[in-house]
Amino acid sequence: MTMPLSPNAPAFADPVGAFVPHGRVIRAPRQPGPLSGLTVAVKDLFDWAGLPTGAGNPTWLATHPVPDRDATVLAALLDAGATLHGKTVTDELAYSVHGDNVHHGTPKNAAAQGRVPGGSSSGSAAAVAAGLVDAALGTDTGGSVRVPAAYCGLFGLRTTLGLIDRKGVVPLAPSFDTVGWLTRSPKVLDALARVLLPGLEPNRFWARVLTLPEAGALTDDETRGALGMLADRIGLVTTPLVGLTDPYGGLEGLRRAYATVQGREAWRSHGGWITANSPVFGPAVAARFHVASEVTPGDADHARKVLVRFRADLHAALGTNGVLVLPSAAGPAPKVGEDEASVEDVRVRTLRLTCVAGLGGLPQLTLPFRGPDGLPRGVGLVGPAGSDRALVAWAVHLCGGG
Image (cartoon, rainbow, N blue to C red):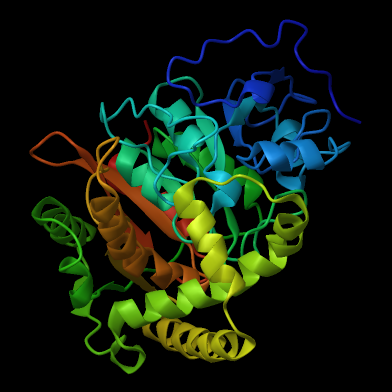
């Protein structure tokens, strides 16, 4: 049974444009629980009983029925006492890491005025960064929690592939799609992890810190410095993974394999609907779906072989007690309205970094920091499969429980 919407909804202010027009509603928890008192916003890819799921596109909104049951993960939050506080803007069908939407606008980044919030969980990150909610659900396929966390100065967790049930969540590329969340504090990050990942062990013996030398060249001086400081603060032996990506054409070769599999699956997920309904997309998303429509079975099969081989290599490198320190994005958020060539350059460099955990099906935790220029950035910890809660526990230890 679902609880009713607040009788006063829609009632809350949205000074940063984080929420979709049809989603400015509040949902009471089903019962008291460990998340009582916490407010959680929900990316508009998750089914919320009685509200339409818009997926960032008005044609999607108009051509899909209003769900009569909650996504599995929403039900878990409500059962744990959380209050759901609105549905947030997403880049169209989650096919972007920039954070803009031609239909709903670009949510304002309260942590970096005049800069994009990052996508595709753009509204979720903007709502948390502005202090409108304690936490927000997002999804992460190619970086859609990690990148907005970095751009908005937040903690963000991409969970191990398949650990959280995605029933009731609009897909993009199921080989990579995961559920994640963003918070301002590791304490709240941990509170959600305890509820949504209850079967995982929070304690793990960590023995090694790993780095990818190639990754440093893709980001800026401030982020490179933060990676070194984080490795030093962890206090374990640091080992460069020299040669890990060489058989695959480096990180760019891995990005291309990732993009090929993603494109093939994105077209399988939505190509029929696109062909039947001719939705209006923003130029960048439209171009990606066009490319996706042309991925051949042969190209996809070759890319999947790369995925399988690299996943095995990465898992072997990490073992059960290694953690990879990696930038969560190529640098600070681009400015709103920045030229397309610059935006594309940042996107490609960022995807070379984020595809590592995606291809590996692994969890990645983003830790926020600010550079000397005052802009937020993010560094990530990629752990073995199922180490999600142990990564969060490490964040609480390193950053405090506030």
